[in-house]
Amino acid sequence: MEILHNLAFGFEHALTLQNLMYCAIGCVVGTLIGLLPGLGPLSTISLLLPLTYSIPTTGSLIMLSGIYYGAQYGDSVSAITMKIPHASSIVACIDGYQMTLNGKTGLALFTAGISSFIGGTVAIVVLATAAPALGEVAFLFGPADYCALMLFGFVCVSFVTTGSLLNGLAMAMIGVMLGTIGTDVNSGVQRFTMDLPFLADGIGLISIALGCFGIAEIVKNLDSGSQLTPFNGKIKLMPTWPEFKRIIPSALRGSVIGSFLGILPGGGPTIAQFAAYAIDKRFSKYKDEIGHGAIEGVAGQAAADEAAARTSFIPLMAIGIPENAVMALMMGAFIIKGIQPGPNMIAGHPELFWGLVASMWVGNCFLVILNVPLVRYWLSVFKIPFAVLFPSILFFCCIGTYSINNNLDDIFITSLFGIMGYVFLRLRLDPAPLMLGFILGPMLEENFRRAMLLSRGSFSVFVSRPISGTLFAAIALFITWQVLVFYFQTRRRQADPQPA
Image 1 (tube, helix red, strand yellow):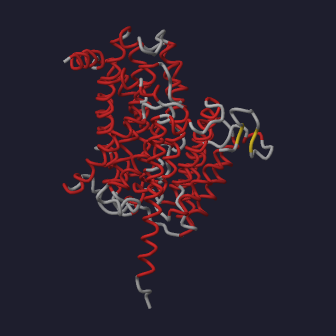
Image 2 (tube, one colour):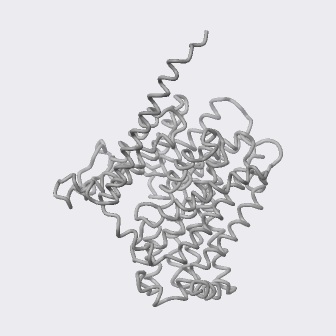
Image 3 (spheres, helix red, strand yellow):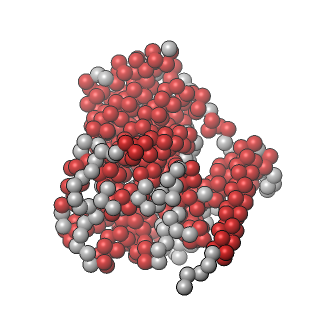
């Protein structure tokens, strides 16, 4: 009953005309930012942060929050329709774009929109009911535990790749090597930069994502010489009842995964989408279809992405620790308004905390209106001839890449990865494991070094801690299972007669 009372108190503040207006502005701006290649909530919030001085406290934080989780919604549109992802919509390119090629763009966008609504709703319930308690979960994870968690992500690469396991592991290792480029955070030594100053800060995730997915797909379409666009025919928006029954389980699984990973520092939407996709590819009844245009491949990752975006507020507001760059900017917005996020925030500023939580559900409703009924308008982009469309896409890719660091070198790096991505497509290599390795590799290295420093070089820390020990046991069982599956598949192929 106390939770219901607190939520009613929050809606009392969130449903004022002024706060509704700020919430709507944030959702619209976030969605539009998500549609543009390369741009994201980080650059938008940083540009709009000075506005918080002139906007009331609750309204400004509601608007900035709306931009953040609105961008997660908008990200899926460009990923599904044009295979141009942001950091939080990389996995949407796999099955979402395949559904577009199969003439099911409307269904894919509807699935992403309704799954994001489910994920956001579940995360808001988690945020409202268990923010103080769940915030303490982050304290239970030490460097050794995070190291084990990253390794578990690597052994699950077979669930992410749509090709062979060997090719997936090779692509993941390429991603790890790319992640080592730049200045070492511990020693300050530049690694693999070839004495090029613009590589001192490493390679940006957006450059790799836009190059390997977006530009590579454009080059592939141009190389084929086809003037046809991916979408043709009538827009089928509403799923059938059997299709809807396939959406719900994946969306709920993704919501739970995203809600948990959003709490952990270093987790967030980017890793949540990979985890949800891997779980769906293992436990879904239609796992054989995932990777070839399955609804589950869109629903699970969309729900996890949105859920993680919501629950990432828990470490910030409950502990005072921002888990990513966007949350660091949000923390700056809190401090600008004279509010220190942390354990005393709920008691000291209940109207702000519960108003922000309630506004997230209001924003969820706004985003469903923006992304589900207006799907037909998003699809109108395919009425433009591809010869006219692809220069515009390349232009926005360049603008988005340049806007991150205001550096022309980033455009050249993106172009280089566009060529690499095209080569991967010609060789039938899936770039998704590369992205997974690029994300997890630096995190694995950093946490491994921390664990070694804290344990004074003793590897026993990885098995003596309950969480890391359990994860390493799961890794061992998973590898054993994979080896057995590979062995029996090889025996079965040898036993089958060869075709004439």
